Amino acid sequence: MSQQQEAIRILRRAGEQGDDSLDLAETALALAAIDQPQSPIDPYRAHLASLAEQVRALGPARQLDEQLRILRRVLVVQNKYSGEEEHFDDIRNANLMHVIDRRRGLPVALGILYLHVAEAVGWPMVGLNFPGHFFVRLAAADGRAIIDPFRAGQTCHPDDLHEFLPYGEEDEETERELAPDCCDPVSKRDVLLRLQNNVKRRLLDQDRLDPAIATLQGMILFAPRRHELWRELGYLQAERGNLRSAITALEVVRDLTGEVVPIRQADDMLRQLRRQLN
Image (cartoon, rainbow, N blue to C red; front, side, top):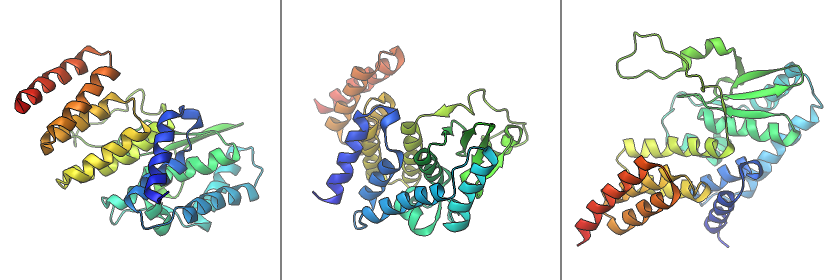
């Protein structure tokens, strides 16, 4: 089995698993391996295992401050992980292999490392549903803390999160409000989707339609029941001129969702595409 085939197998298996049993870092490595097939995956697995072992070696730790200290020591001091600010929009900053090689990356890619080591040692940690910047939250016996993986594992008070909200086109002078759900936990699958959305968005900004379609297809492998992914795939395939592939994707949308609006939108698009084929 080639590495590409192994990566696809890992992603398909993740798509069949419940969120609790999904291996976040292994799935992120599989996504990276598809884009970086020349790099053997096992050394990166070994590095992830080493990170967890380094955390264990400094434990056990039950108090929040001690756990935070250990996370920073292992990930920031010993392994030099930090945010990539100079080339923030480089697509490779979302590739976990590239991030491990350079010890630099996007907030969500670095967040996956924090989530990985915390789960490995049994410390409850979740990613947060915050727009524009990825945070994780660690819970301990004596409290919990929001951590910014991009800024050397610094902790953030909830009242200070306004500065991280993304600006809209016309609201630079308007005080931005935190949505009620911005600090809600997200699933592992949603963390991975957020990682890949960074890639897809940058590809579309560069008008690289074929790689964006391939990225969406990879997302569907580990999140096959997300109808919004199939809908976007259908629209992109139609834009690319792949009408039969677009029809197939939009037919899946109808099978997956019981919501009226997505079904109506899919039906409208299907009628247009079928007319073009006839």
